[in-house]
Length: 254
Image (tube, rainbow, N blue to C red; front, side, top):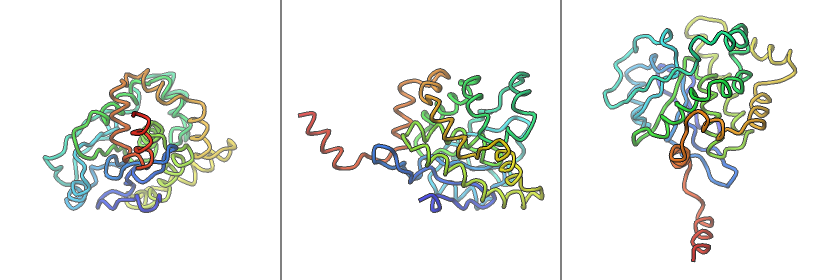
């Protein structure tokens, strides 16, 4: 199920549709609704065309101002781009704890970030909920950690099991090797895995622990997410309920 969610958008390396994942109530996340990605500024003209063909009409950019450069090819006028940096702005306590080592390249910081800055994640999820008709893509630089945090929250709200969410995060490791090779830098993946192993854990285990100990919806509501936003996210992300469930609902209403 996971493998056929990868998308080939020329110029990007780590793009996948969040559709096609099972939910705890027997449904499935909708394909074409929400996509996670690495930096879209690397897209070629063909890449932008492929993005539009996938139905995307809204781009959520999670990068800091200093990370944003010129697009390699012209961004289509059909797109609405919203810049919502996910990194906190000058918080010495958080930076001291999390920006000082490899931990900021892992899901270890997700819980602390969500608890200290719920408005940042809440703002992104709200923007996705309120986006215009069509698909939404959100991205950071590599499409792993900031994008991984938002993907975790969206999928949890949709009712995707924690194990599936952790498996989705893991898919970035194999995709990012191509990005690192393309830009001529060392692959960070093995170092990050070793860092987590030294602490007796893995990225998957960290995500499972985070989700088991955190009420995602409550945390996002603390960040400004409304009832309407929660309903809109679920409507956007979820495929229709199975026919037998709809039949049961109709019978109960009689």
